[in-house]
Image (tube, rainbow, N blue to C red; front, side, top):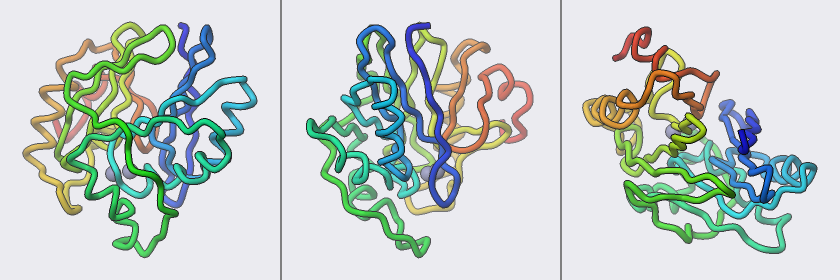
Length: 210
Ligand SMILES: [Zn+2]
Ligand SMILES: [Zn+2]
């Protein structure tokens, strides 16, 4: 395993942020810098990793709230990658006001993610899959070599993402899960935006929503 994955549970609703580093090249990406960006940076620095990319599964405030704090401590700014269908949500601070919350503003995304796009990280490559339903621009990041998918708020251990928030749609979410997640091998690890780790096989057989 050449990728190391550091999960961090951060913020007011316990969101999983993932710091992913390539042992060989020391390059790293942060998937969903949820909150407390300073803390994420500390974890990277401690390992001698350089954060080159910020990959966002979607733009809800509890997944982007740590971006400003993370960038503040960095001299070379990493790229920020988001699907354009979530740009409006990103510009609206991820809907924080809806929950009586406030997050500091962060710079506009520099990478417009597309379905099927390949994102290199060190010696590995992740595939972007557009999985709308929780939000219109939700994507997941899949690395077949490492047998792992970062799936944000699309699917959880025994659950699925909310579809009652603006831009959500139940039928669309179920279709996304069936097409882009359940089509993967059973042993694929699913690292979600909230809660513990699961696998495609476990959710295929046990998830009450599927
Ligand atoms: Zn969300
Ligand atoms: Zn969330």
